Length: 400
Image 1 (cartoon, rainbow, N blue to C red):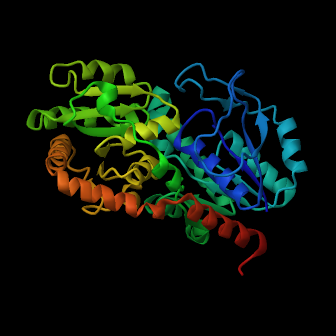
Image 2: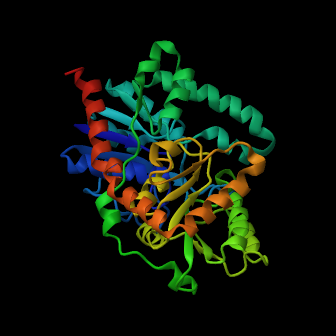
Image 3: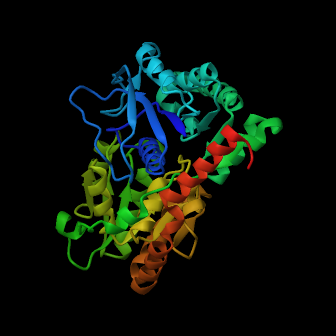
């Protein structure tokens, strides 16, 4: 098949979306399909390098782009809503069998235009819970939410199929798309390179941070921003460390909250117990996480929580606050612990207790980690790409 993928953000910027697009493009290429990715052109001097997804690099048709002056993180490029000409001509000349959009906005509109003009199916993967980001709009948050919700419903209904990375998100989309189109919604999580993560040589955070050999390392990976709730983990770790002095916190990632969290880490109850590694190349980030003892996850804005699958594959049991997509990855009391988000007033205390319990139980923690690693094939990108391929074939050729 000849597939066009469109994305609002792309490599070398790292996020769950950009990694998902890259892994799908390379996975399709590995299975013999031709793939063209339409995405924002990287900044001058930037290079799109492999981030660990197996398969050949896809072809690219670059869209004129710019770095937003505010709000967006460094390296995040946005396509201009005009100047599509060259890339759109390249995409039409590619003669796609199907167009797959990974954003409903600028590149989503481009994908819809391309699908209509070439007469092929349009697939849309809903990667982001946009409601959780409208606070960045300040006083425009409320009207921004209404406009975004209306646009999303319109885009869902215009798509031949909608892919949701988790079951609860699929249910929300079905409720919004209407009963007459609910069967267009399909649950297909983003896959990861299980074999590649298992091959990583773990980096011992104790050596990197200068911690004692008997330290129990709680690892966290992700963007440091208000919508990810990293402050909950910091406060819980402070409580937990007062009860179990061996505990330390490894934080991998950067973002707008990094400076504030760095200041919090210098307070007396956390001083010397937190290592902020910053944003790292993906292979090193995963190797550093793999050197930890358990993984903590407090974000409630995910559609899947890809880092949970990566941590479990690396053999770390997870302690996760229940939220969208969490139970699709973490099996409570099997390879981790899932904590109810409510009541919020007791969440930090309950998270601290769970961390202490897992830190004190070396044997149980090890058993959970081994089950997580052993059963990680369920996250394999090969399986997920095969599911996407099957969906493509049904849309292009009809039911077998």
